[in-house]
Amino acid sequence: MKASSHDEFREFVAMRSTALLRLAVLLTGGDRHAAEDLLQIALMKAYGRWAHIEQPEAYVRQVLYRQQVSRWRLRRHRAETTVPVLPESGGDADAGSESELRIALWAALGQLTKRQRTVVVLRYFEDLPESEVAALLGCPVGTVRSTAHRSLAKLRVLVPELGPEGPVEQVQPVSYTPKGVRG
Figure 1 (spheres, rainbow, N blue to C red):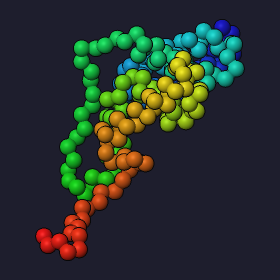
Figure 2 (figure 1 turned 180 degrees about the vertical axis):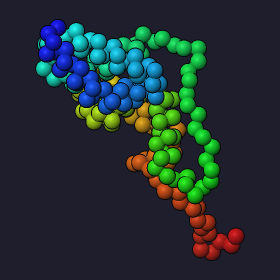
Figure 3 (figure 1 turned 90 degrees about the horizontal axis):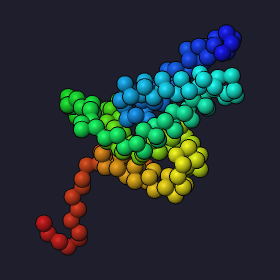
């Protein structure tokens, strides 16, 4: 590799590695070490082809997606999965805060399967259309739709605050007695 290409690559890594690591963390379900490994592999592959890459960030992102898909296709199951434990809430005063919702959503993403998490990240974090997600994952568009649907349903069960359309406010139940009926 020429010195100028080497310098361009170093500059790209310096400028974009934080955003790419954030994406890798999402793809790995919050496992920072796995995310660092995933990003390292993607950057190594990009480095080898750097002179031929027209859109470096798009190339690295695609390598991240495909490498993550390869990981879950290999079905390397661990005997144990480390999951961060949510702290106990100090009280109800701050129960609906945005930060608690983010923590709960982060933990819930970790409970999705790798395939579900990948589809959710690509569709809703990366905002890719279903057809592009399907092309990246090498599956039909219908599979992406059904996986996204099941993933969102599971997230709504794991994080009830999301509700059917996003965060919902807690509503106090109202007792109702029909006319003419004595309680």
